[in-house]
Image: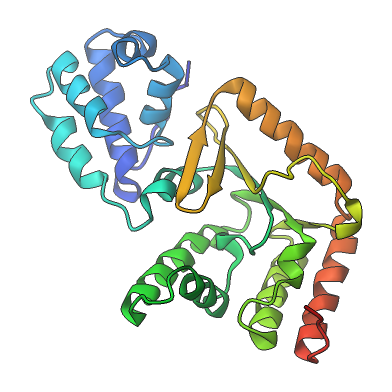
Length: 280
């Protein structure tokens, strides 16, 4: 059962709905398990809604209004809160990321969104959508850079990233863009804001050959993992699945270069890009 948490509704719309859901449920004398059972979701899932780590979908909101006699409150507010600046397949993960206390991520081909520079992000979005208007690209880039403001806090969330060496070697936007992007990652590591490791090509087969992986931990909700593919993504909270993904990340950490060796490699590759020496 997820422990109640006093959230700031003004800073997070989901926190507002979560607080109200907890108050309405307790007023009705229902446990988290009892409220979730008709929806075929666990008490833990209801706890995640109350903690603000899960988005309230419309079908759930309608059920809560009916069971808790809240006169359409959750339905009305859910429709407003449900609007997101992120793609549908990533919106819920981005919202969970915003309240996570720790994020661990393995990136296969791209610098993770939280660590991207403006120029790098522009190149990525243009490659994804070559016929988009510049206004659309700018909107996407701005949303991505706003996500990175999570790192303005000096300590939370803990961000531990394992970069496949392919992330360093794939030239996105050319030498100047790559040099700036890698220097940005290195600067964050040198400032002790993030922990970064590189999984070298010479490591061979590894625990996450299938693709990228993100794990998130929270103060008042169970951990979750996120896996994605082009235009698809899934946020998972099944304990066995999250445990398996956690083991996979631990194995990646053990196989990767040390943080010190990784930082040296990132800076060396950045320097190669600056001097036009990086080979494809």
